[in-house]
Amino acid sequence: MGRPNSLARGAIAAAVALLASGQAPARAVVGTLDATPAATILVPYVEVDLTSPLGTTTLVTLEAPLGAALVHATLWTDLGVPVLGFDLFLPAHGSQTLNLRDVLTTGATSSAAPSGAYAGCGAAIPPLVLDAPAVARLRAALTGQPLDASGAATCAGAAHGDQVARGYLTVDVVTRCAGLGPADADYFAGGAGRVASDENLLVGSFQILEPSQNLALGDRAVALEADPSGARTREAGRPTFYGALSGFAAADHREPLPTRWSAPFVAAGTGLVVWRDPKTPRAPFPCATPPDPLPAEQIAAFDLAGGAADVTSALPLPLVTQRLGAGAPALPFPWRAGWLSLALGHDPAGVTLPAGARGAAQAYVLVVGSGTACGGEGRFLTGYAATPLDSGTAPDRTLLALPGGGR
Image (cartoon, rainbow, N blue to C red; front, top):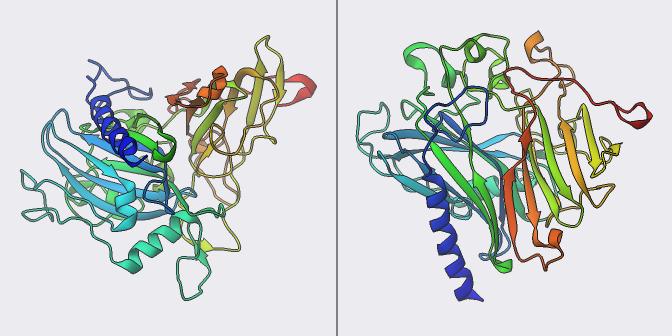
């Protein structure tokens, strides 16, 4: 099986590069999910099986189609704790593919030398290389294990009882090499001290590979445009993508994601990847007291004839990012086929939010389809974005009337 898997890896890597090179629309609209160069991209879910070199891994391809870009990548746990950051340089029209297995094995990354004067970068950006203790700590963070081998019970991710690293990735266009990330105070500072750039230069895609099954799923990375002049992304109190990290001061200028989604389902073979905004900064925590599960306003299921059921309590989505169904824990669909309405708003307990950030919460939903949905042998996976029902810049908090008064 080694040779087919190797060939599959090569073919998939080529497909990733082609996917990332699509032409941007002539006009992008802030507040909508455009396939366009952006200042930030989100890979909503990453997964790496740490038990086998042929286990599941995630490839992320970055491209700079409009001009050279210095970028900062941040790896977050499935509970939204940032655990690794590193800089990369993409030459004009260049691209780079990251295999997250490599990152979690040695921290190895490589990057072209900057072609311009980027403060703090020097003549070349050194590759990310982690020593054994740093790799062990990173793996522990992404598998929900204690971070300190000496026994201090501090964790950063959810414990699933396996050796699968889970989380998500953000990549931002930046102006300089500073050793800072989105959770650091000066990253989105005003004036000359600002690290994050508002230039919309970056596109990307991702693939989650399952070599042992000869399967892969993937999609474009989520493009998040920056608009420093638009009221929707610069006025304090409005939601922005990174708003929770700066007290919703809109300092990041990034458009937020939608808050309501529609997703089709076939009970035998549909899964979901769901990324959610915790709406408050996350940091390592005592393993015995993880962050509270994220609630949802309403999750409703509809059959093909329009029959409805409230499945909010039956379909918990407690983490910042999670994958359910189609090869993961099953989804509790009440019918063989239909669609889901997901209103994922919430407010964290004990946190005072500005009026414009209350209630609704940005999210991203990816539909994962399996061959079993069509009565096949499950020999393929598909991944595609669900349908947004509102804009994060103008959230719709209208809940559906359901049988029995469920809302």
